[in-house]
Image (cartoon, rainbow, N blue to C red; front, side, top):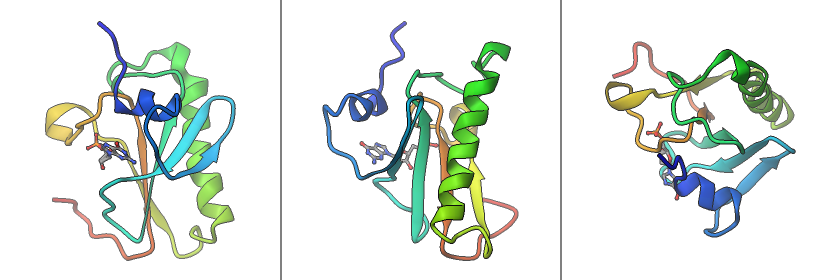
Length: 115
Ligand code: DGP
């Protein structure tokens, strides 16, 4: 099964996105439907469909995606007030794009528990 998605098109620059972070393995771009004043998605360039599909071989890459989000938040001055990172997995988790991504949400106080 191909695991290409709309995020693959963003990686390949086939469709536009507001890219705010990039390194060899990770891309960060603003969410089309922001849920907070800052809402950036961090993805591995090599796609993993879901967190459930990740394997021990993906451990370093997953760490890089998380550290990219944290580093971006720190550099943007978001870390002191705080932020939320979310990985939705499969239908009940609210996942709609099957290319694993970390949501970075910041710029307002988050509610807990989530809906
Ligand atoms: P999730 O529900 O966790 O799978 O989150 C998918 C997110 O992706 C959702 O918040 C909206 C965002 N999204 C979907 N399509 C596009 C797109 O074409 N461009 C951008 N920038 N974001 C998208």
